[in-house]
Image (cartoon, rainbow, N blue to C red; front, side):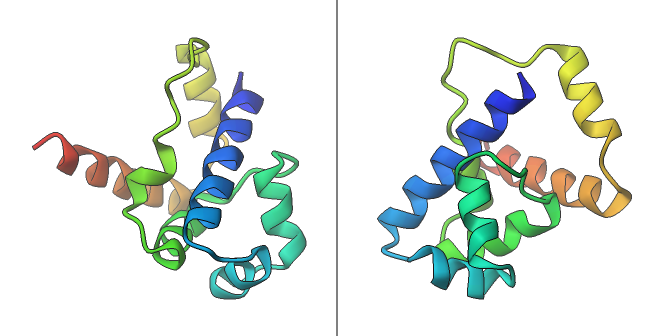
Amino acid sequence: MIKNFYKQFGKRLKQLRVQANISQEKLAEQVGVATKTVSYWENAHNPVSFSKVPIIADALNVPIYKLFLFLDTDEKLADNDYIALLQAKTGEELNTLFNVVKELQKINQ
């Protein structure tokens, strides 16, 4: 199920990148990664680091929450999947995730 999350994130990332008319090369340059890394993110070969999420959003000129507007699938993550995902993150990554959650909360206000 976590792999499904990465696939959905990659699909959404590519969709936003194409909408912004930005090449993989340009996005990679703006985020500070190799072009191959962007390709790996979009194809769910490697997960994106949470610390890169705000940088990606800035490069695509979208609010952070728009990167995550893909959870319209019938297959939802189970509680244990969320716990495992969070336990694998560093303090810096968790801080970035917390900032994403704060941004998401702003939409509901």
